[in-house]
Length: 218
Image (cartoon, rainbow, N blue to C red; front, top):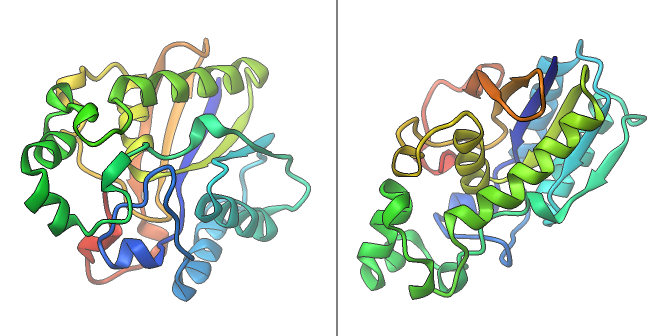
């Protein structure tokens, strides 16, 4: 059996400001995020990872490298463009509230009705395009390590769509499970690199947060 540990990157300045980053935008990790990555590493300390894979976007790469520095710098790390965030087109860099004012239907469907989301209105990427590239990557990793433990560091919206699709969730219901938080861990298992089971969803218990910050989750 292969276990895939899917990590959302540490919290960034644009996360804090409720801005869309997408596949082309980026902003630095917050200072507190480095401590949260250290706590994440503590929760994974006993797991013998075979390989780590990260999105090429800086917020994910920095998270991945900081995490491996705490875990084991000898774990191989591969950058894979298939793990990048949704291309959100014209929404990237904009505040959530400004997107809601300019494209209310687009935003509603992106957040709640993926089957109705029309990416052409903002010049972005469709849910199926994201799912297809992400699925190809995860299945490839699992074929390479049929009895291994794999780390994947990526982004909230892409991870949410891909994880739910991998476990067979219909497109219309991809968002039913809720969002993924910064520095969270979600675990999938598979015996054949094709069919996946959800073992854990959006775990952040190791961060010991008393208050829920809505800007942590997407």
